[in-house]
Amino acid sequence: MTSLFLRGDVLAPKGLLADHVLEIAHGRIVRMVPADGFRFARQARRLSGGMLVPGFLDLQVNPVGARQDMPALAAQLARGGCTGFLAAFITNDFRSLAKQLAW
Image 1 (spheres, rainbow, N blue to C red):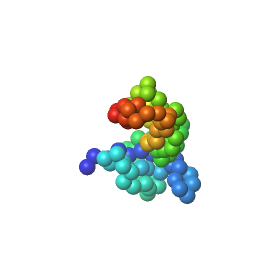
Image 2: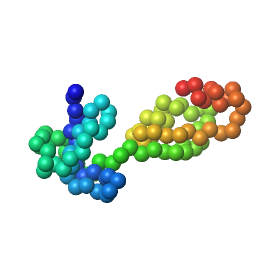
Image 3: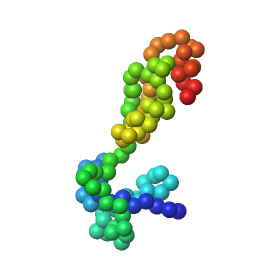
Image 4: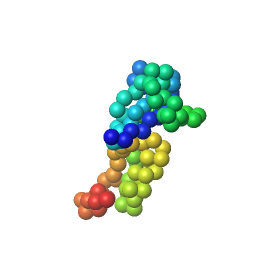
């Protein structure tokens, strides 16, 4: 298993954790430990000028219309840290809605 190690301040449920290392494997966080207790901390990729935060979920992306390119929308949201979203569709006939969902 190949892991990626990221080092920096981490926003966690209990607050901000200073100087921690995240191990990421297969796109998931495997563990999070203080850098001073991690023997490979110096090899970890250090975050510069920010903090590590969980991915954001946008629960209402509005409006999503017939001309909206869903893959482009998903890519745009991902650049801002959004890892999931719920598209809100404009009330329309069934065929129009089905076309919007067929991306």
